[in-house]
Image 1 (spheres, rainbow, N blue to C red):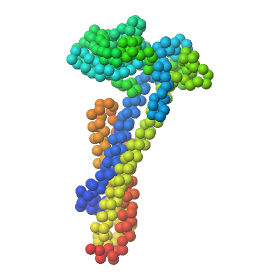
Image 2: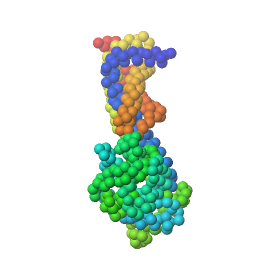
Image 3: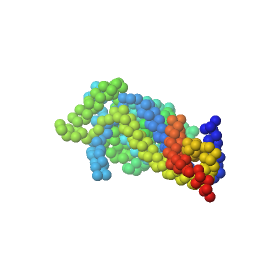
Image 4: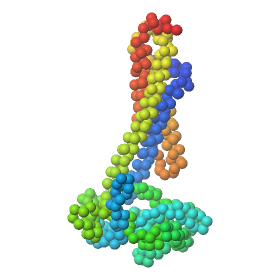
Length: 409
């Protein structure tokens, strides 16, 4: 009952100057909103990427040119991987079950008067198996298409919808703009709707034979990446497959002992670990920015509480003259500071949730996730800032001399 009375007195004193109270909490509102929105975006992005990696399976291995950044420039052998390398790996590496070379580039895709920008994936027939992505209509590219560098295309779900709407797409002709000019492709299939796989929206891509992509669209002599799949998801088998791949590629590329590889081999779990590290760094950066806003908010709360002590000096003297102890005055001002920061935190949660939802609706990239843990932590941080900021003003109020306080005008 005693604490409830102090709470009501503190709330009543804050409502006397509502605008000043809101302005004092502005920093807390911004800080908490930043925490909630950032955590919602980070959680949504993490969930999307984790789901994408999980849909690929855990035994994937990625082989790419060994490119490094030195003095701000990308250096390395960009053309170290060939189609022949991909063809040799399943034959010479017993621990490798299947291999898929690929080339990816963004290009404009046209059908009559409609057009869309899509990711053009040049690959092999093993794509469907290694990515667990099936054809919904028609057929997928075949070895015959690869050998003849045929101008055929399989559309992703979104690309088909954007270019053709509800009408059939099979046997229709589309145009894809490459660096060698626009080329006409015949649609032979449409993929099932799948969503995101790792960092790629596979529904927004057009799949063509890798030989066609290399020879007729971009004039390339090498592949960008080779995706392999170990025989089992066991860590030992994945490591064995990696070692076999390195050994075969070093032999094929004539790399001598002691020389650096012109390629890099990474298991899928290594990408997941790298992303976890990246996520932690981003979380620290965003948390630091939010912390600065909360610190500014704490200064605002301390300022308003010091003003309140000055304005209510006579009131404090009257309370002490009527028998109030210094601890009672200290508690009242600490409760007031806590209420200000908690209300600011609650408003910040609403603003942060609204901001995250707005970003989700505008970008349509991934779903934001506002967790109870993030809300709880934000409110605890806001309340803590209020208590810390209110300690000095509360102590100053409790140390006033009752006689001098009653004389104050």
